[in-house]
Image (cartoon, rainbow, N blue to C red; front, side, top):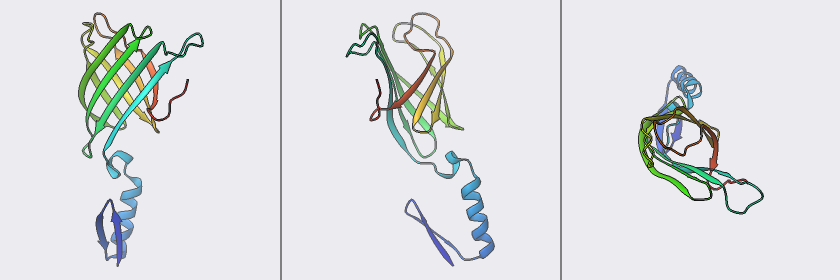
Length: 152
């Protein structure tokens, strides 16, 4: 008999064949199915111009992903040295195959924007796939780093 502990759950496997099945399923299922765990994190991209200490733009995405891959998030885009602040923009979605499809409206009146957020290692990749109709201040593409790992 083998006893395995996963996230506080004790799994007892008595049959040798079942032990092989368990390990095969555990290692071959996609990551988001085998290891679903909660995520509560903010990612940011800062753009600096002309050796200034204040960023020209700051784009951040806050995600709260539960163990069932339900996503609650918030977008924020600050550009032109803080003169245009397009946030907060809350959204809800679902994590499917490491991607989150986001439908959003700009606080400046732009409507029906659609973006894909992709989890890539510890980073997020943002791709705007349908620009909002009207005024908005979001980048077409961005690579965002976890808030505690910023570069400039």
